[in-house]
Every structure is written in structure tokens, then in C-alpha cells.
Image (cartoon, rainbow, N blue to C red; front, side, top):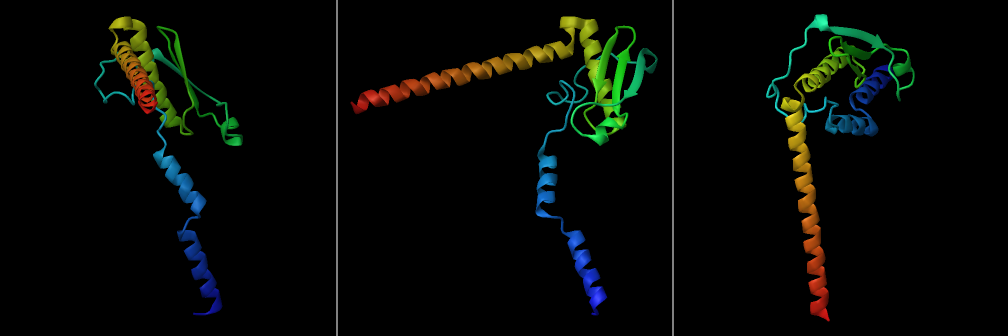
Length: 162
């Protein structure tokens, strides 16, 4: 092997193996939870019967996003503003850098909000929120009871030692 091909071979090896910090960032991105609409993470797909939205009822705009991200955020119009004309509900979505993903997410969020607006307490979204809230309160209550039991147990141990 001559010298130029040796350098070329070393360069290829360096391209194949990513630096350790890059692998760490990629691993963190894979482990992080994706940004999803309000209740999509908690429910199974198509388990809720939401009102259907037609494109004629929607007014869509693409605006510049805000928040962290610097030039990539400030110079691209990938933030979606979606308005449901009959109800006047407006949703702004800038969760990803992709316009198509933001459009899809905005429609899902708007569909949940419109369903909640028209059906009120009869809405599946409302019922699911109430159920998750009740579960959360129950979990809190059990944790509080366990803490009280632990305190009593420690006090009993202290009394036994004396």
C-alpha cells in the first residue's frame, strides 16, 4: 500500500466510526419521547370517536416559529397555524422542523379540541382526561399512605430500641 492510499483508508475508517459524543446524542434522541398531542400517547389509535374535520372548515397558515433554535427556527416558515372556522378554535404547532409532521400534529390536536368543544362532557377526550386525572389522584393517595406507614414503622423501631 502506498502512502496516499493509506491516508485514504484511514480517512474512510474515521468516517465509519462516529465520535463517542455523537453516538451519545443519537442514543438520547432515540430514547426521548416524541412530542405528541394531548392524549395520543395515553390511548390506543382509533379508540376514540372524534368528530371528523373537513378541509373546507380549516384555514391553514405557515408562519415563522419562535423559541430556541436560532437561525434554523427564525428563517423557516414551518410553524403551522390551523383555524377551525365554524368554532373559531386556533391551534399553533411547531413541535418539529418538518412542515408535514407539524400539519399532521396540528390537525390531531385541533380534532381533539373541536370534539371537546362540541360534545363537552360527553366527549371521549373529556372522559379520558377525567379518568387519567382520577388515576393520578389515586396514585398520589397510595403514595401518601405508604409514606405514613413508613413513618409509623420507623417510629415503632425507635420505640423498640429504647
